[in-house]
Structure formats: structure tokens, C-alpha cells
Image 1 (cartoon, rainbow, N blue to C red):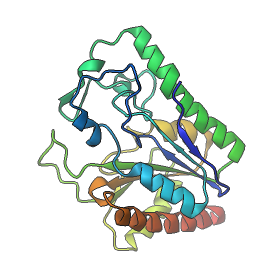
Image 2: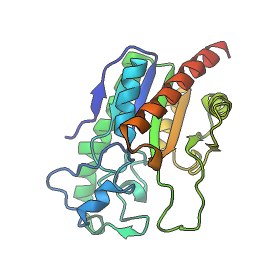
Image 3: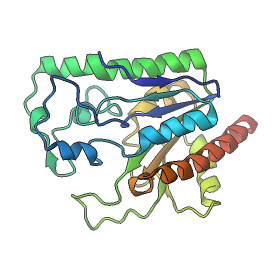
Image 4: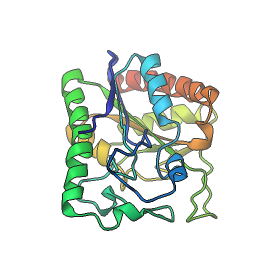
Length: 241
């Protein structure tokens, strides 16, 4: 069994990072160039460091994934084909092409299920007022080289847009060009928040940061200040609504 990393805290926020690791467990052979694990297809670059920084700044608990999304994607429903991807942004993942049902079940029960069980337990015991979900995205997809991704940050949401509608103008007021459900849409890529927030009626702040802004310690500190301050404002606004 592979468990997520957990950080303790007392603030009324639970930080979650679904794609924060590029680790491949022993016994799993993806059949790819190891360098791809450092790419955006293997990890949401910068999110582990940002989650740690925010946990410290907010004094908040955090749950951080410890396995690469190429092994199993924590932000996908168990029945989805993309749960264990056969390809990502133009790169075939040979080791995932002909997995037996036994291997599928093993990855789900050893990695995906414990991760979400940890989030369930943290929500039930900590009773947060807000879930803060962290992701990063690449400035340019190899499969869509002409697609412009100018947003340094995007806010994702599905049916429950309470926190997003407050956060969007707060971030824009800082002079940021903020993606409203861009470059991805929470209406289609929102499993973790759908399960742990929307299903409970719990507000959530789901963030995508362009990964060229998360490469250095200074970058992490910069976004930590912005997100921590916005989270404090968001909590106040949600309590007043």
C-alpha cells in the first residue's frame, strides 16, 4: 500500500495536491524514458513545494500524493479509461497498454483508494471550511503547439462555484490574468473535488498555476504569498455569505 504524505495543521483549510509526485513504485515498469517523469505528463511541477509552503504559511493540514499520475491518476474516477493512462500529451506509456485486470485492481487498491480514504478521513476529522486543491499546467502542450495558454493562474470549478466566484476578482485585482475554468474545465476534470467537496456541499478553491512560474524557491514563495492571502480573504467572504 502506498499512502499519501500528510502534514498536520489547525487552520480551517485542507490542502490537497493530486499530482505532486513523479515516483514510480517498485515493481511498476512504465516503459518510458525516465526523463518524461520530470515533464508535466509525469508530475504537476512545483505543486509539492507549493503545498508544503502553503501548509506552513496557513498552518493548515495537507494531503500530498506520492505516486506519479502516469502510474495512476488520483484525479480520475476509478472506472475512467484515463485512470491509468495509455498515452499522455503524445507520449505512449507502453507499460500501461496491456495491463491485466489484476494489475488494474492492485494499483487502485494500493494507491488510489488509500489516497482518497486519507482525504475522506481528514475532512471528517478536521471539518475544514474550504478545500484548497493545487495543480500546475504546462505553457504549451506538445499535441497542441498553436494553442495559447497565457494565464499564469486558472481557477477550476464544476457545479459549486461559490469560492471560485469570490477568488476570481480577488486575483484579478492583483493585476493577474486569471483563467476562468481555463486552461482546463472543472466541469470535466474535477473528480477529487466532486467527490470530497461538491458531494458534501463544501466550498473549494481549485487552482492551476502555469508551471514555468513554479520552478524556483522564489517562484514558490511568490505564489505562496498570493494564494495564502487570497485564501484568508476567501474564508472571510464565505463566512459572510
